[in-house]
Length: 156
Image 1 (cartoon, rainbow, N blue to C red):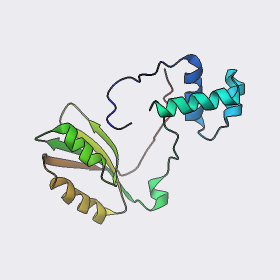
Image 2 (tube, rainbow, N blue to C red; image 1 turned 60 degrees about the vertical axis):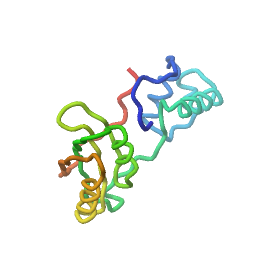
Image 3 (spheres, rainbow, N blue to C red; image 1 turned 30 degrees about the horizontal axis):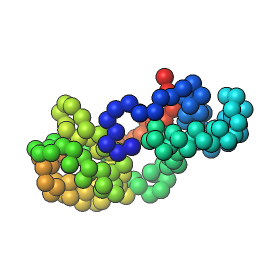
């Protein structure tokens, strides 16, 4: 889903939307159960899921708690760029600490969310960011407490 800029090329019908919403509620739910609920066979659900993932419409992933895995510092970093924004966004998105990259309009050209083991790793990352060509400045907004995070916005 890197570089995603527009609506999916794939037209989503009601069945595909129902599959997506079911998996957003519970990504471990069986295709047989989903099929029973929406009136499709297990094989048909499996085929739809395969097409949806291949088209980049959705991903099925394990969402972890960074704190439980020893990553004690999370932050959102606003990046101002003096040159090619898309090239810089691609470079930033390849850094192992970066889990979210978005090109924006406004105060910052790019926002990145980072997950680090501790303040030392965050400091080292900031030094690295500021040495990247076209990165003019950064502003770090450290997370004090993750209040809520949702992945179930549905297909509307």
